[in-house]
Image 1 (tube, rainbow, N blue to C red):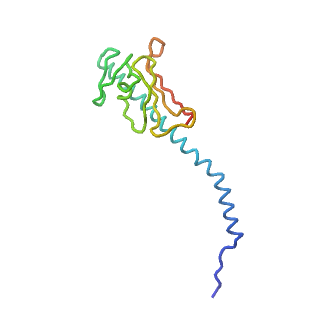
Image 2: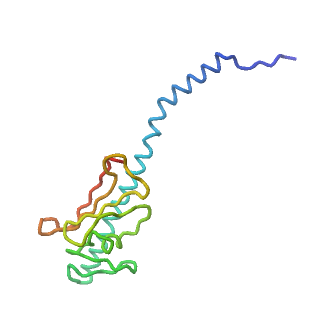
Image 3: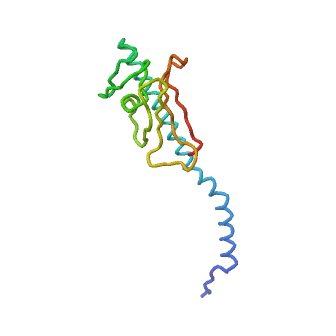
Length: 153
């Protein structure tokens, strides 16, 4: 019968040191995944805002409605200004169908701004949001301006 032999203390310490070195290189790669996922979510939201705005715009044009006449999307009456949704709850807030995001700010006039952020996430510094700024043809901007701000994600 052979004697049972285990690992020596030196072998165990060597394995721990190797695992420590590997984790020092791997950990930073995994640490940035939260930031990457927040940025990707906001990029998706920006696309959804563009789509909602363009859909309302197209519907208004196809029906021959005046530039400030509301349209109905998915049973929601969407207020319009300069042929695009206003930057408030009655405009882009109703045109956009997205969960997991919170809208703040806004207004019914040209250049009004609504900010969309990730629900439950507050950036430590900077901004982690998408800005929807209402159209302003008088300033040479006939369509809404969408801005992705990720310096705080």
